[in-house]
Length: 335
Image (tube, rainbow, N blue to C red; front, side, top):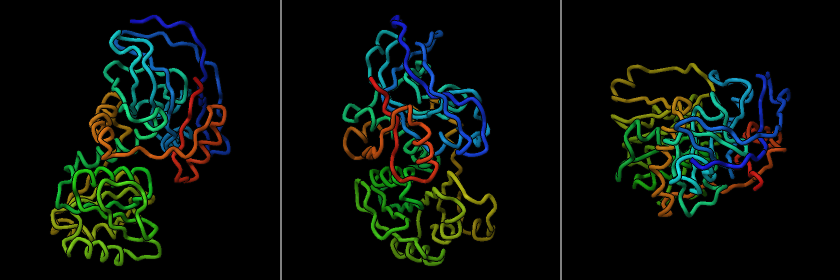
């Protein structure tokens, strides 16, 4: 263990559950150097992503969220205390517990279990490494649970313009799948390792979306549909799923949807639900680090960080993300 000097940094603290973002009070407080317990390490956070789940948890929408706490699930930084062989190493990570049931990354100091430490890819900046956690962990866990895409398979990503959708497109493309991006525009313009066909869902019916996917898959349908939106694409996904295909869910607008049992069992379909809040920082960062070689090889790319905020502007950042901004937002902590 290395003894760190007592240094005060800053942290965001949320004290109470509120009804709306307009009622949210974000307290910026001084954060003393935490005292570690056995099995823990201390990370000096350099950058921390702001995810929709961070803001929803700030409002108390996430049922497991505790108060008071420091929010923030994603992070990158440098280990400053803990096992001697970790001191000075640059790390990255994420967690369904971090910033939800324990203090999180929207702070200068972050305490982690030693087993949650994983080195970040050397070719990623701190801002890039701090921005990829939740989207890429969610996308990879969906594919891991349903069977990783393989060359020759067709993968349709519904809601491909969102960050989880972009991560899913990248992973499927890296694995050699025939990728179809279902989105509200004509052309898929975000990075992918291989070619991506686009289906413009804007002003299109479920039948029209399904027909386009069937055409792009030579009439077979998609082997895997990563439905990042849920109910809005449920019907279109079922109509374009190949025999024996799998549909992955991570979110929804409406809880209840019409369900055709006959089509489901005759199609031998599988539904997979993903909730990364159930994965703690040890599990989440392990999954993220399985993608490290992809980032280092250039087959995967981090998101462009569009806006970097100071912790003092947290409320502005939270409102931006909750409002559905397509920009990738991070807190860049002063060093």
